Image 1: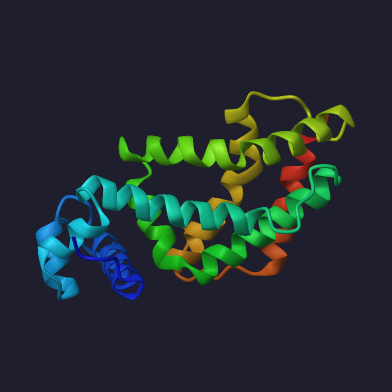
Image 2: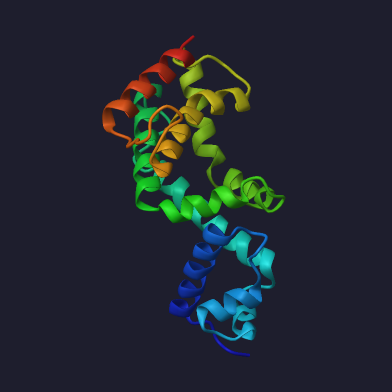
Length: 196
C-alpha cells in the first residue's frame, strides 16, 4: 500500500475545491479530479474512500477551520455584545481570506452530505456556543429563542452582507463592497433585536 503525501493531498484538495466551485457538484467526479490534479485515479483512493468521502472530508475541514476562527478570543462568560462582535469580526475575516473555500461550502450546504458535517461541527463546537448563549440568557442579555430563530437573527444578516460582497453587488447597487461601518451598523441592529 502506498503512503500518504501531505503536499500531494493538499494539492488534490485545492483542485477539488476549485473544480466544485467552478463546475458544481453535478460535473464533479473522481476521474475528472485525477486528470485535473495530474494524478492517477488510484492515488485519490489512497486518501478518500469515494467521491462523497472526499467532499465530506474537505467540507468538514473548511467548516472546522471557520468555527475555530470564529471562536478565537471568545469566552463563554463574556458579555453577549462583546462575544457577538468577536464572532462577527472573526467570521468576516475568515470569509474574506477564504472566499473559494466558502463558495465550496455553499455548493454542498443543501445536499444530504452536509448533514454529516453539521453533526461533526455540533459535536466539536456546540458546547462553547451553547454555554455562551445560555450565559447571555441567564444574565438577561439575550431573549430565549428556538435555535433556528436565534441563528437566523444573529448571523443571517452578516452572511447576506458577505454574499453581497462576494458577488460584488447587492440587489440595489451595481457595485457593493463590505466595510466596517456596514458590519457595525448591522451588528447593532442584530443586538437590539435579540435584547429582551
